[in-house]
Image 1 (cartoon, rainbow, N blue to C red):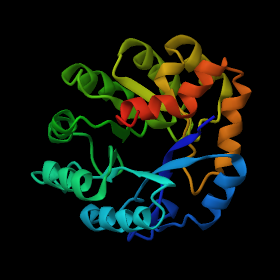
Image 2 (spheres, one colour):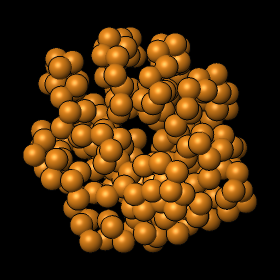
Image 3 (cartoon, rainbow, N blue to C red):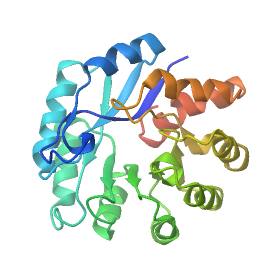
Length: 243
């Protein structure tokens, strides 16, 4: 079975306020992923003050080991206002990237980001930092765009937000999630049971979380072979137009 980790940071940040904006070294991650049987990884930069620079650095990482990686272009919806289509189009055409990443830590999602995803037919991986209420707005406004909301909506293990997010996952056909950093296994089971395996992607949030440990959660779900194949790679390949 071909296994794709759909959520991993790579490269150096420039903020130095925490792991998320300092350094995302892949040295240990790649060894751990190999031992776990992960075949390919979706990578994007850590938090950065200059995403054009960070995306170029990411492209260099991928260029050295192209068979190991897919790339997403990271953007700041506020700071990069007026430049997002240009930035992402360059990343797609020159770097071969296949998705957009943004984080509420930087700014809330914008119409410009959504329009860019619509025009270029790209999935959007958006960490909402628990702001579940916003999902209904962009899901309805852009039904043609597929949005992946990681961590069941909250890396901070906010079970209320994660539980409320599952309702959105069920309701909107263009809302997806990944399994990275989800601590409450019962909620992960509920997401699969209610929304279906077609709405969930395996992700580790590497290199800071161990990909082998995160992958084991998928096996513990005891899905059917066809459902497991969707979660472990099929859903990503479909959303990123890589089938």
